[in-house]
Amino acid sequence: MTEVQDFLLVLHDVIPTAGLLNLLERMRNLASLELKGTFASIENQGMVLPSVEDLSLSNQELLAFVEFPNVTELYIATKSEFTDSIPPLNTPRLRKLSLHSRLASMLRQDAPQDLHSLTWIDPGGGCASVSRHLNSLVVLKFDHASPRRECNDLCELILRYPYSCRSLTTVEMRAYPEWDILFHMLLRRNFLTGQGVARITTLKLPGYPGISLLEPLAELLAGRFPRNLPPVSELSLGAVDGPYFDVDVTGCEDCIDCRMSCDHAYERHDQALYEAERGKEIDMSIIDPTEVKPLEGSDPPLPPELQTWFDGWSIRRRTWYAKWQKFDVHSRRKGACERHDYNELVAVTGDLLHGMPYKSHAISILYQQPELLQPCDVQPQPDDQVEALGYTKQLSVHSEETEDHSEPEGGGRNRVVID
Picture 1 (tube, rainbow, N blue to C red):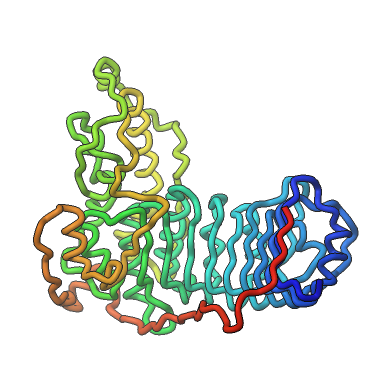
Picture 2 (tube, helix red, strand yellow):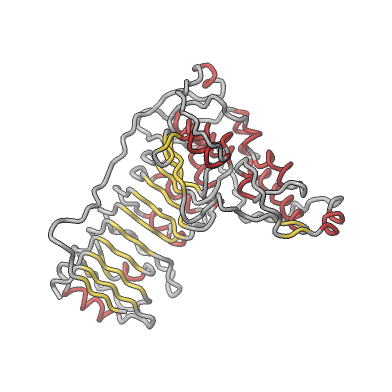
């Protein structure tokens, strides 16, 4: 067993923990371990497996019995149903972590100092705020279908405290956040913080938003102040009330949210119910599942007008959701057309979209024009226009760290699979 380097064990019955530990102890060169199943309870033996570098677990139970001091990649699918105990992460060399949101307290207790990438599995429970003090974190991912609440949580965290997650450059959102909070978060982060804090350069979204959003978004990600920054009121949810709640306007939810149009008809529409509901007041007692309770304060302080705006953001969100519930009684739009893919995300960066200039690429796919427009140089706004919004124009220099994922020479490794 000393030659085994990869070990996969899948058991539908309870895993005999004592026998498993005895087996693992014989695998002196084990580098990759994947276990799926529930462990039998035993006394903590304090076993150490220093050779394991890649660890994948169905829950956190094994970490109570075994230490993995040299693990660099860790995946924990969910929290065990049989224990509330959440052991600390004794993994000082950990670089890549995928963690269920119910185990977020692991990072609150003792976060690894060199953590480079964090993926929230089934995000929820305020997990976005946990990343505030993870200053080595470069990539943050939300691995769930449309985790809009958590994306908004993260945007508000960095909006109010732009020095959070000092190394963060890439966010895989898998949802469209509220545009007002996203844009002003990027303004605070990419213009206010200066050197020592990385610029957020890449967002991964279900699709490209309309050009009125995409152009200023790409410029913000590039560290350039947008020539055509929409007013905060035009970025908010209220800006789409007109087309969204107009039964004569076609289009899916995501296209309207992204300031685009499409020809998808309603999934359902009852004209009689529509006429009956028109005169009724909206019910503000309905709780929005994506509602965010606003954080308190900001550091550095937000300009007074923006502080007031974002302090009222949660109320505006609740109002919009109440309107949606009233509308849903008689009509429902398709959630997303083929422009939006929540599995295959697109990368929006400061200068390029998948290697093509963003203007020519975006306009070609959104409006299907035959000619590709040539990109033009973007001239930044004068400093007085930047500072009029309460931001200081300081661009930080950031070089992304690259990793070599090539296979070592000499062929594959010995692998054992038990299912």
